Image 1: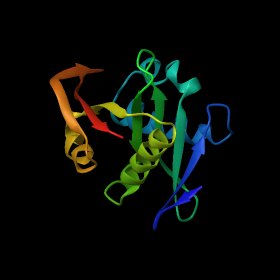
Image 2: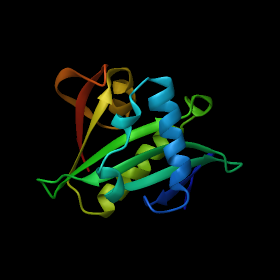
Image 3: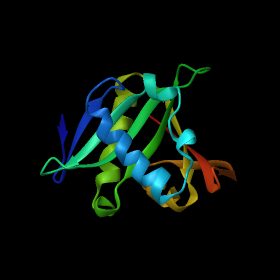
Amino acid sequence: MATDKKFNIKPIRWTDPDIRAAKEIRIKVFVEEQQIPFREEFDAADRTSYHVLASDETGRPCGTGRLYSDSLDPHLAHIGRMAVLPWARGQGCGSVILIALMNEAARQGFKRIILSAQTRAVGFYEHHGFAPVGEIFTEVNIPHVNMSREV
């Protein structure tokens, strides 16, 4: 388990007991807060993704994200379902999650990482070396833009 000043990162699989906390975070952030339909939140990629769960110093879960390989390009990784609970935002939790996923992408030998960012989060991803690719599009009624970076 990787440790940051404030947050612990734990890799988890879809079958691990701790995946329940990651699912609850995604439901709170995406389904309840952002009004994304529940049926849109979980997909087939979840079963094979590398997931991480962030917790604060007391062990309270506060964020999650996932990494998976592209089905057509073995050198391409996708990061997604980045979610941080409101009380942990602005404290570095999202950065710790993203860095853990980028490190795992490097460990697995990927050459490039892509993600679909909500437009309000573009600055966060740019801070971590991602650049917008293409035009803004709407997904689940939220403006997004694809972003990419080298591993």
